[in-house]
Image (cartoon, rainbow, N blue to C red):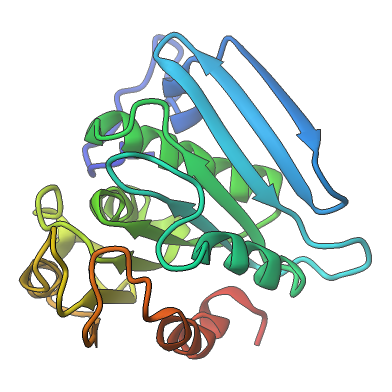
Amino acid sequence: MDDPIGNPAAPDAEGRVPTPLDALQVMASSDVMLTDTLRHVEMYTMRGLLTLLWHEPPAGVAVQPGALVLCGGAMGGLLGPGDAMYHRLGEHWSRQGVAVLRVSYRKPNDLDLCCVDLAAAVQLAIGGAGAEQVVLMGHSFGGAVAVRVGVGLNEMVAGVVTFATQSAGCEVAGGLASTPLLLFHGERDEILPIEASDMVRMIAGTGELVRLPADGHLLAKSDEIIWDRLEEWLPPLVLRA
């Protein structure tokens, strides 16, 4: 398995290729069910605490082949853009059999470590939630994390969604190849101009940029526009035909 920025991982002394979970070097972990379908996971490492909120499909609901793995910006966080968009996605899609993992980084704003965190969550979604592929989503700085992991774990990634992404760190976006790419950006973003998303789309050579009129970096005015587009875009990537 390649690393999250697309470099081939070196085998260990026994010829085994290390995984993202290996790279975390987890010393201990703990988890608890907050509700019947929401699991809180903590993974303790020498470089910080990785926290996941894991929305599981309810009992009796068939597990679908896709999962969603979501990450925040340079300050971390679990709720995502808009009005707690990530929580809403978790509640909605898990009811349809799609596992949703929300990632709280060990060290926000450290691109390499955050990529390992997201890649580890992908490994958990596929190895622990029964998914065959995942759709990655990232807000702001997290857009670069999602793009880089989408390149590094390309065969495991069915699609990438960014919200008000930065372009720094997305220089590898051409490696997404045919992976579907959907970008949302506010036309009045006070932190990252919409040209950042347009640049990422151009580097990737593919993708759809959804322009959000009169909205800023947190995309607080565009929940329903984003939601409606995701409702059209996601099903072919995460649900059985």
